Image (tube, rainbow, N blue to C red; front, side, top):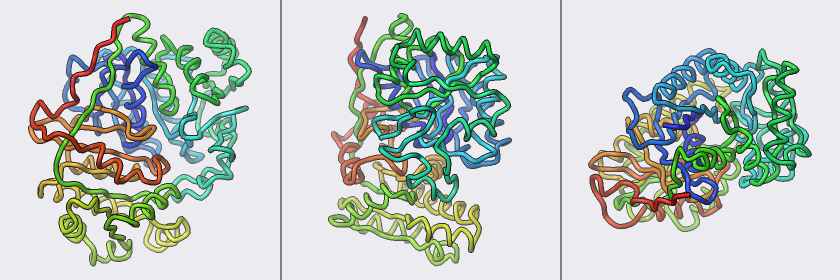
Length: 439
């Protein structure tokens, strides 16, 4: 294994896994995603391993412990470069968890120069003058300002990150980035000599991310969103340590289900669009907490509407979600919904469902954890940042894990179609052999 990624949620893990698999055009790395800390060594053919944690919103001390354990496992697999992947909207609080995890990983890896670049231009996330934008709005003026778990009320990443870290924060301006990777590396070195360890790097386009990624060749630790992963694969292919592998198709035929727990604006729009032509079931959180609604109701609805792309969701307007959290407690609400969707997924798979699309990072984590999947192969992208994923084994499950703000308005039905293809089983169900492209 060449690159090891520690992702702070499940959809973010699949996001960067897609980037590492795709690469810059000459192919990417053979990538496997691990839901949670693996307990066994990786396969010998894995070039990039992505460990998906649910550490974004847990106490910082727990996030650090989990991240360090993941890093040690990745190092044991031979990884030469560690990537800490967080959301392209830099979701965090004044206490972390981004800063504390970066500090702990930097100390373990004994590095004094770390890139911080959450930019993902394909999804409208750009960084300029160290300020994070969502399309044409500052982060603090976007919907993220009202996020129920991690409201982001400041777009200046220097001000956001500095209280979370014991290291000094620096800024690499876009005017340097456009000069190319050598200019970026020179400024990294200059800032490190001045005792400034964390480099927030501007990026307005994939071209910028490519230059930044190339500047990270040989870096022990890189942190950011998924976009930087494209060039990280390229570095190992260019050095001859890997051959570019084109992404193959992966298919599973069988019954389908869509489970949605995100309350983002994009997801609510996607649910409304899906509802125009497909059966949709809304879940009332109060009914879940009272025991009136349980996984059995979800399973019954999905089975009654099999073949029609049925969708079950618990999304709501941010103000309504916040009111329920204040009434019942944020952790109680989150735990109840995680248990509901996780148990429903288990029962659905037991009943024969083979294609599952999940909306929302927390819900994705709950579903994958409940299904006890140990490794997922990465296939083609459905939309930017959302790949087809395939479990290993004799009876594989095809998955798509969508971050709340990702995907087009018709994403859910289209994702199910992308998971569907020729009937396959056993080893034949894995991603079809990809063309090897040698440099």
